[in-house]
Length: 202
Image (spheres, rainbow, N blue to C red):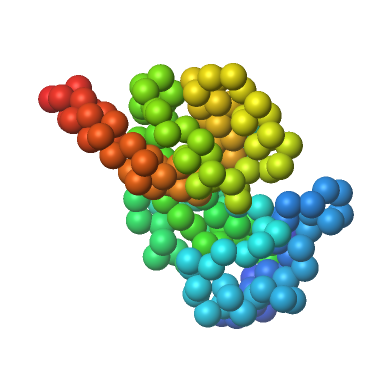
């Protein structure tokens, strides 16, 4: 797609803003492609913190000032909508749009330290969290109804946390919400794990 653009259209559109034709959404089949009409203004105006309901956030990575979409074992290079947001080598997430030139990463966000903390201390968190129901309640708006029922039906706190962690794999945002709930409900545990992490790195 990019080669076709460079071969045929680049000389005519070199200095023009390329409008996204559609974005990758949460639906199935053709419904997964969301037409740009209703949302383009958000991205044109550089609202990089925008949250768009119905859009699918793609997990990716930045290496050598290039953005890659990660889909299983596949890595696909995409163009950043805002090149200034590509400033560090790290895991990221973004909305995937498509222009006449090819795939474009919009609304790039770097993995938050909270998500890394949740992954790093998974075993201790599962074993030591006590206020499990309060934490699950904080995450309730982000958990599908069927999965919520499955979690709450588990017989022990450890079992509930195991099932909750399977939901956390959905992305960075829910991990951040989980971390904020831990800070609120399990502050002592977070302090202990933070101290443990510092000792381990020394």
